[in-house]
Image 1 (cartoon, one colour):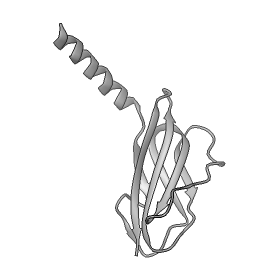
Image 2 (image 1 turned 180 degrees about the horizontal axis):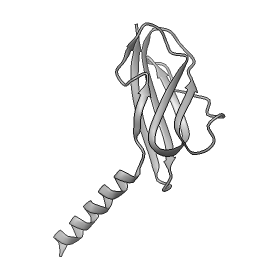
Image 3 (image 1 turned 60 degrees about the vertical axis):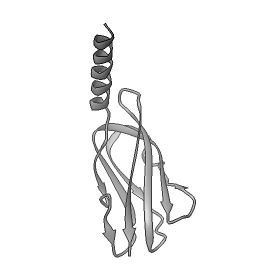
Length: 113
C-alpha cells in the first residue's frame, strides 16, 4: 500500500513539474561572456507566465529590483531594461506565477569582461 501511495505522489509531482514554465532561452545566455553590459535582458518561456519579481546582482553588491511596470500580465517573452554596471559577474533571479497559479523561480548569470 505504501509503495502505491509513494508512486502516486511521484507521478503527481512529475505532472505538476511539466505544467510549469521554465525559461526556454535567456539573453544573454546563462554563462555568456560579453564585451559590454547589455541594455536589457530577455526571458522567453514555452508557456505563459506572469513575472512578479526580477532582481539583478552585480558582483558582491546588493540585489537590485528591475522595473517590471511594462510587464503586468501573462506572456511568454519579457524584455527588461538592465542598468549596466560595467565589468563583472551579473546574476539575474526571477520569480513568477505559472498559469496554474504555482510559484515559479529561477536564475541565470553572465560575465562582462
